[in-house]
Image 1: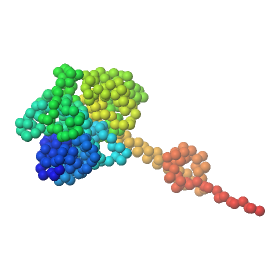
Image 2: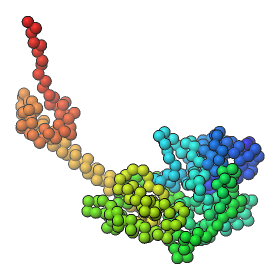
Image 3: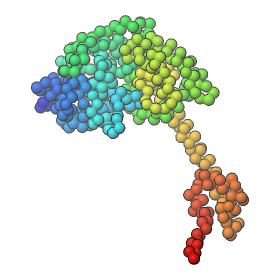
Image 4: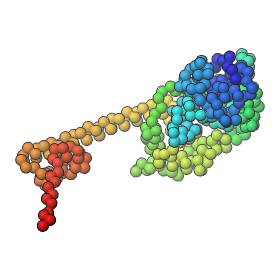
Length: 383
């Protein structure tokens, strides 16, 4: 496909949506050929999950949408999952950059190949002002329940996976259902609106992600404040599971949360909190933040406080370590000045505590100032 016309990216538009409108504005043999032109050659035949090479995309579009880093930030959910440390893709052993690793188009755009949501009123407004509607990132967040512009439930697109795999689809080309019978929208409207706002706050946050160790410490402090930790700092699993499941029971039948709120999912969450390992899912992290902190801003402030306190604690430990080192070295130097023929055995008897500490923690300094005395071996006579 020869690209002669490029659309203007609209606010909060997904990369998939931009690619679909580029295809609409330019002639190509088919949508798969358009994908190869935009994202590089590949034998993958699925349009919705075509491997994305953003370096190739930015080159073919002459960086009209920005460089790869800017495209990732403005047109995908990569930054959202990075801030939650809950990437829905596997980096693999090579740990290649997201921009060139070849992750699927729908996965980068929507966070999941099976998550497609629209707001019918947004589609009507788009068609009234533009020739086409477009897919929005905020609608595809794990906690995207409501449209924040119109305060209406988002509709789930009903197009078959086969149709999405074979060609680009824009919102007006899909059928959708608004009502999920498993959720009482009226009763839980306030909670759904708060969860939706939480996800958008994470999406729009331009600050650097907080490291996983600080996040875990912050979560444990909050759990301790709620009495969900033992005196030894372990998670009270039964009480935690009961409170967590009870609070979000109304989401247990929702397709995006049924696994996270099942007994197996809660057990996975508990093991992830107790034993640092693989990253927790975005659904689990968002629900934990909502439950323990209420807002993303409050959680981020607590993380900054935790990081500051950790740095102060580490600094205090280092100062104390330097003081102890200086004390034991001083004892060794005093012994060397008082004894002309000083040996390690004599020093170990004169100052046993300092000798053991230096031997265990500062051996290199001890070897330089009080080396071992190795007796010369004499070869025995043969006759």
